[in-house]
Structure formats: C-alpha cells, structure tokens
Length: 347
Ligand code: ADP
Ligand code: GN1
Ligand code: MG
Image 1 (tube, rainbow, N blue to C red):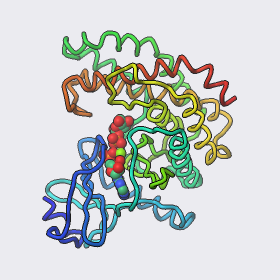
Image 2 (image 1 turned 90 degrees about the vertical axis):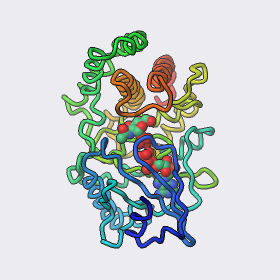
Image 3 (image 1 turned 180 degrees about the vertical axis):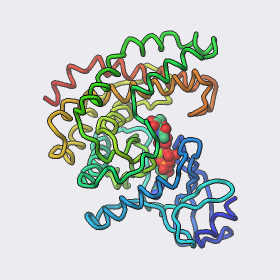
C-alpha cells in the first residue's frame, strides 16, 4: 500500500521507514521517516467521517485565516501531494500527510499539573485565535457529534435493542445513567434558550491530541477532524475527562480512578489564561457543568457501543467498552462528589 501512496507525495518508498504510530482510536496513523524528514501519514476513517473533503476544506480555511492573522502560530496541516491536493483519494481510501513535529511527543496520561495547564492553554489558545473567525464557514464534519440529547436517545434505543446478555451485564450502569438525566436537561436548556454562543471548537481535547516538547511544554494541538462549530463545554469537558484522573479511560482497576483537584485548578487556569477575556459570564457559570456533560456523554457513548456489539469503537478484548463505561461512570461519580469543592476553588 505504501509503495503506491508515498510516491504521490514525491517520497521514495525504498528510502522510507514506515511504522504504525500513536494511540488514536479513529484514524490509522503511521510515522514515515526518510533520510531528511519525518512525516505522519494518516488514513481517514471513512466509516466515521463520511466526507473527508469537508475536513480538508475546514483545515485549509483555518490555515489561511491563521496564516494572515497569527502567522507565528504552529498550525499543523497536511502537505500538498504532487497533484497539488492535500487529501488524496486512492482505492484503499483517503490519505493525508503531515509534517512530523520534530522533538514532540504526546501523553496518554498526565503526571504533573503543569502538563494539564499546558494542554488547557493550548486548546484555549486555539479557540481564542479563532474567536473572530466566522464559524458558519466551517463544515459540520460529524453531524450531532456532541449533541447530548441525541446521544441519550440513541442510548435508550440501544438499551431497548441490546442482546439480552450484554444488557444484563450493564444493568447498574444503565440505571446510573438514567438517574443522572438532569445532565441532559441542562444541555437541552442551553441549546433551546441559546444561552451560550457557538465557537470554533476542537471537540476532541483529550491529552494525546496535544503535542508537547521535551520539557513537557505544550507546542500545539493536533487531530483537527472534529474542529467545527460547537460549545466551549465540549472542549473544557473533554479536558476534565482526560486530565483529572491519574488513570486513563482504559484502566480496569476502578480504585485507581481519581479526580485530582490541583489538576482541575490547572485546567481552569490554563484555559482561562487564554479564554478568560473571551468567554461570556454565562459560559463561565457552566465551567464545572462542562466536566459532567462530557464524562457523562462519553460513558453513554461507550455503553451504547457495547450494547450495539462494539460497532463504533471496536474492542481489543472482550468487554472493553463495558469496562470503559465502568471507568467513565466511576470518574463521573468522583467528579460529582467533589463538585462543591471545585466550585469553591474557582469562585
Ligand atoms: P486519531 O484521530 O486516530 O486520534 P491523531 O491525529 O490524533 O489520530 O494522531 C494519532 C497520534 O499521532 C497523536 O496522538 C500523536 O501522538 C501523533 N501525531 C499526529 N500528528 C502528529 C504530528 N504532526 N507530529 C507528531 N506527532 C503526531
Ligand atoms: C475518539 O480519535 P480519538 O481517539 O482522538 C473519539 C472521541 C472520544 C475518544 C475516546 C471522532 O477520539 O470523541 O472521546 O475517542 N473521536 C471520534 O477515547 O469519535
Ligand atoms: Mg487523536
């Protein structure tokens, strides 16, 4: 496959080393190393992203805007192939090639609150620099991606149609999710009453979508497939979901899942350093809600997938999506317990 694809970028396959790379769940990613350069080659997951062209157009619009308004910003975008296109269609699917950001790495779990601060600052900076960009210029690359109302109704129908055994194994989790339905109602109110504005939102702020340098200072954000109009609660919420606990979403020893209060403060400080002057007063009131919104939605998404025989996330071992749900539900419970203290910290 690489023998056919790399030449489309003027790269000689015989002179390149190609290795699977990273821990992303959605796309296929390889690191390509030639004598002089490093690249990231990616095959877009077309069962998730039905219109890869839309992603390419979004990224190219953002790139032209940022090149004009903030030329100093490192915006990692795909390189044009010899045809001049940055998205290349082949019989195997759609591919793109990024310059490898040298001396960078991504983290799957944060060990220091300073890293949480850096990550939050990078995502805050991204939205801030795009604050005056007209969000209607962006395609919706994943319709209803963070529409919690819809995710909830999909969950209900997954419960109704689930194989008996999978449903039985999920009983406690289903009951917990049902009991926390208020989280959906608050979201519905936000949308219906237009309480907060639509912004350019990354929608996948988990920590391995930030590149860090060797001193673990943030360099930039990556994985721009889901950049589209949305609410800031999506970005802040996914940071809470992935930065607060010292164990990540794959952890099966639930005792290891925790909410590190100093990491919460670091997310707040890092994000607000950039977005503090941009967010409205109402948005600020929803800062803590953001964590509930996103952790709850991810629990719903993992459980829905389990009930639907893992058609979306797949599974590397049996019951992985059930375990991921237990993990996220545990995280949510710990977060809810601490809510009064978290409020106090940012009041
Ligand atoms: P996915 O959508 O599957 O999560 P990503 O775009 O996040 O794919 O890429 C997967 C991983 O590859 C990232 O977590 C990061 O470690 C690495 N990566 C992606 N792009 C670059 C880049 N331009 N430079 C260096 N590393 C990168
Ligand atoms: C997926 O692509 P990746 O691995 O960064 C997913 C996110 C989930 C995440 C859970 C397009 O992110 O929404 O939060 O897995 N992306 C898509 O790990 O569904
Ligand atoms: Mg990713």
